[in-house]
Amino acid sequence: MSTDVPTLDAERDRIRRTHLRPAGERPASTARGLHHTALVSSDVERTVRFYQDVLGFPLTELIENRDYPGSSHFFFDIGNGNLLAFFDFPGLDVGPYAEVLGGLHHIAISVEPERWDALVARLTEAGVEHEVHSGVSVYFRDPDGARVELIADPLGEMYGEQVL
Image (cartoon, rainbow, N blue to C red; front, side, top):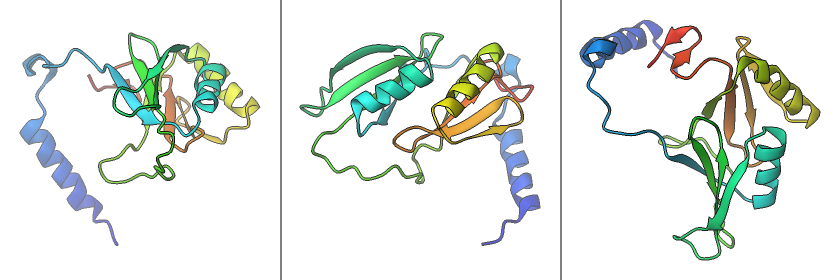
């Protein structure tokens, strides 16, 4: 399958002209913020060790999932009042992680630049394969294969561009 980059660029430009409004002209969002993003865990304790012990995101709660008896719903503080949540589904074969249309590509979590280098070192020490990109992003997979990015850019900024 070949990709016609000039056609794709033109379509992106058309969508931008049609739908993107300057910051001062955009209406306020109807949302208050992202309450949590929920991923699936195959092993609760392994997930806790990774996100809390390697990445430094404190576990804030571990409760039973109201939608699936015996399942856990647990949360990590990722700063700024945001949570990263997980479910496990004991006895349900959910299969391996897969990137599919409509599914999760990756989650990007902003970290302070002075912490970013230390977190990259912690990934190395923990034997987690990772790739540094542009000097501000590190990409890796969690124990279940979900792709995670730690980015040293501030919230609302991407590689020096304001996106919010």
